[in-house]
Structure formats: structure tokens, C-alpha cells
Image 1: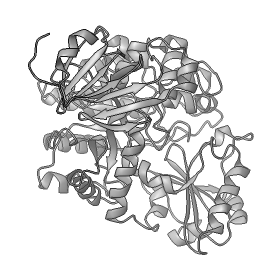
Image 2: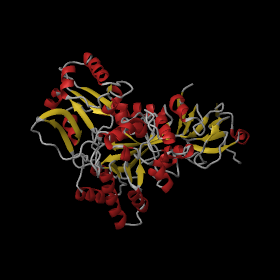
Image 3: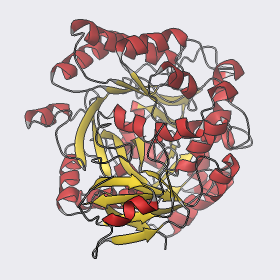
Image 4: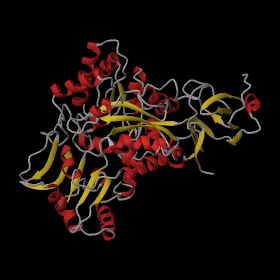
Length: 541
């Protein structure tokens, strides 16, 4: 190693993993926002100049910054102000009601109370909250409580009235209004949620910028330096694009963002983005336009993922098909012709098959086009679908955090035969499909350690093993969180590995993620330092 350049930042005396298959290093040198060199402490010593900042890793583990390949950054920031309905904060239905009532006590009557994160399969009776329960607990406030998956919301009578929903309101296209014996249950699934969302206060531009900054700072605390924002425009259309540019301009964007544009009929921002030249690839290394997202179904845990076979115990429920073939094919054809990669949501096997057919049409029409189309989540692909994805160059974009958080729910609603095979990441890895991973935050916490734990053990939070044949090695798991995420964004030449000339994004952990016991990784790992673009943006010390 020879270089006359003095480094701006040097990490030394550590165990540095540059990426899959690369030799470990002791020291890492950074110049500006790029990796300058790696090597032994002695090899990097000559690059330390009078103005070089030196960080002693003291044996700690460093690796490329994590890339959460599918989350909702703005929602992650905004929801930090809502009632926390997750199992950690409200493990029982009674805990949920108490938390809602505590918020109501400090909220003027008539103002909205909103919560996010419940999972009814973790309650003793496995039942969702009902409109009657919410009415009794909060009679003076409109209330909406969104399931962890984001595909189901339960509301009280005041919220139904605000939205103008009655027992006679027809189900919207791609949505379900819950009814039982002709009466409303308060449950709204998929597009029916919009009936309530549309009458709730919309955050201001300043609040959205604040949410971007808060969400990004939260990610940095976990060593996450890159993310995909999965459905930019879902909250307030083009205002979100403006907010990202303002955050970037003002130095308030703490994470690299690959922004997926919402392309659903009736709420698409693709057309106004295309009009001003914002197509896939436009931007810089901090904020870049990604693909277009269309929802084709819901969530498995909410029994709205579109399946070929019915849900366990519900012989007439196959989930929700959001769009007929003809409409989806037309949208995919149009958006790809406009220059966009497609990154569509598909969880159930019927939805995945529909998306593969849509993408196969695009590939057949132009076999040489270079877009890497993705299927977001891709929960229940079979062997035949996997081969078709491989042939058509389609990438699965799963979230292994789902295995840890929701695996037992999948077994409950689908039965063991289907449920245990959920999100088969090792199969995809062996096939060379380069599966990425992430949290889908705020569906799951952006905390990466349950995700890594699930990849190493296939265990749920209850200890259920979800098909041990899908276990990854530590290096394979870390590759999914780094290099494969970069590849899924077409950015593998600039990030995802620590090699000279690549972006200087580094995460430092107190545990050696290559050798530590999975239980230790889950319960005792913390991010000590995060370096983004050559700058230290998080430092626990």
C-alpha cells in the first residue's frame, strides 16, 4: 500500500469486515467522503497526518454501514409522536386502552388520538380491538389504531362518523370495511383506511422535514447509513419530495435515501415527478429517486395478503387483490417506459405471481433493458416462482425482522405448512437472487439486531424455528444488510463494501457480528459509532 495522501479520519486497532469474502483489516483510512485504504495498523500508520482524526476501536467490530432496504422514513419520524401500540409498549389489549386513555387525558376533546403497532395475534384471545371497546374507552375523541403491518386500522364511532362511514358505505376498490351482522366493527383494511386518513390532519411541510431528520437520526443510532423510503408521497404527495430536497439543502438529511415513488391509481406522484425529470437514478448519493411502488395486496398477519389458498380457519378468505391484471400490467408497462424501476408490494403467492407476470412482460418486450425490478416483501414465493424471478432478473426484497416479530402470527393464520416457510431468504441467497433485508419501519423497529438474529436462527420472539433450512451464515446475513441492499438500488459500485474509492459509510458495534452468539447479538449489541459520508454522525461515547 502506497499513498502520499493524509487521511482525514483513521479507525485503528479494530476488527474491520470490509464485505463478503474480503480479508479482515485492523485499520481503515478515510479521505473526504471516500475510503482511502484498509490494512494493518502498521500499513495505515503513514496516512496519519497532523490533522488526521484518529479513533481507537480498541478491538471493536467495524463494517459497512447498514442499508435498510425497505422502510418508511417519514412515517418513522412522524410516528414517534403517536401512541406506541407495539407489543413492547402495550403487550395486552388493556395496556393499549390505558395508553390511549393517557393520551386522551392530555388531548382536547374532539381532537384525534392515533396509535400504531398492535398485533392482535400477541393478545391472549388473538382478537382485534373493536369499535365498541374503543367507544367505551375513549368516548370523547376520534380514535384510529393501526396494526403493526400498516394494512389494517381499527377506529371508534366518532372516527367513523368523521369519515362519513356507515353500515351502507360500499367497500372502496382494494379495500374492506369490517362488518358483522350488518353492523360496523370498526375495522378498515387496505384502501378503506384512506377514508379515515383523509379526514385526519395532514402534517405541515415543516413537520415532514422534522420527521425526516428525526427518523434519520434514529436510524444512525443503529448503524444504518442508507435506506429505501418505501412509498414517498403516501402522506402528502409532492410535499414529501419538496421536504426531502429542503432537508438535503439544509444539512438535515442524516441518512442516504433511495426514494420510492407511490404509483397507486388515485394517489400516484409518478406523473408530476416525471414532468420535472425525476426518474429512477436522478439525484446524488444522499438523495436519489428510486423505483415506483404499486400495492398488489396486503399483509399476511392481517389476513389481507392475496393467497392462492384460503387462510387457516377462513375458507372464503384469500386476502385482498388490489388491482386486476389488466390495470397492473398497464401501469407497469407505462411506468417502465417512462424510465422507472418497479419495486411493487407483493406478499401472498397470488400477488407475487401477478407481479412476476407483469415484469416478465416488460423483459420480453425489451430483453436488454437493465432495470432491476423488485418484489417488496415477497413472502410466499414457491420454487417455480423463484426460477422465473431468476430468469427475469427480479429481486426479492424481504424483511427478516418479520420472522422475529410476526413468525408465530404467520403460522397461526396460514397453518404450519405455509407459515414456517415464510420469507425463504437462504433459498434466494443460494439461487443468486441477492436478497436484501430491512425493517419496514414503522412496521417493525429499525433496530437491526432482531433481523440479524432471525437470519442466523430463523427464530421468532417466542423461539419458534421457522424452517431451519433458511438459516444464513453470519457473512451471508451481513451481506444481505449491506452489499445486497446496495445492489437492489443499483449502487453496489459506490456503497455496501469498504474498499478504496467507495463511500465512507461505516458502522462500529460492541459485538463481533461474525462470531458472537446470536442471543448475544439480539440482546446485548449496540452501535458504538456511525460514520456517514466520512463524518461521525453518531458516537455513544
